[in-house]
Length: 257
Image 1 (cartoon, one colour):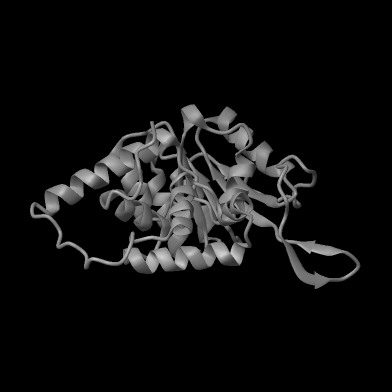
Image 2 (tube, rainbow, N blue to C red):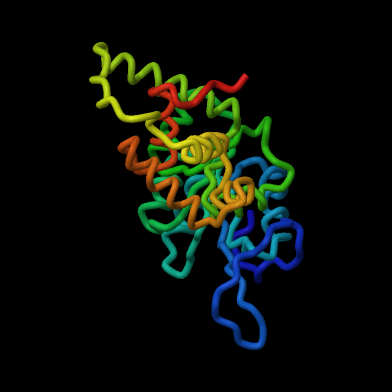
């Protein structure tokens, strides 16, 4: 178990363009995200810790294998964390406890789940607890540092198998709760979303970050954010997950084959 806070990992192992602040003093200052790893399997824990340590944009601040150790680390006022990478099946409890504890003490902490559990209940419970991403271990990326940086850039990493289950569960729950069809929206001139908003929505549903969408559409990130703000307003939602769910319910997203 690693409990210390070594210096920032140096090197280009993550292969990611780092954010740079406007402040320069004899060189550019990089934004470094502090990562806590909670994984009970020693080999997997070392694998994730090594990936984080190799990346210049991340700092490994702790690596441990139980709920008790994670809670004790988080309770220390001297410890700060930006990203929590956690398994759910821990020997003394659930990673959900760690997620809730971390987000309560560190509201800006963004949890990312990597677990063998792929059932709808665990996935939805993780999202409700505050997880911004859910990766099944069978489809875990070779470089978790890249996934973490993409999440900090606005993406919500989620395994395709998990995404399909979440959408199916959500659709089923909505239908059960709403036996009667929802009132039709007022007839507007043309489709609900503009062609560009529809393209942005589709890319959001596929897990692309704002920066990636901007590159694919050959526009600025600000323009992408404007499209997202407009489609949020049209769909009456406040987050990317809500937008995907509502768009799926309205038939605005075609199922991927």
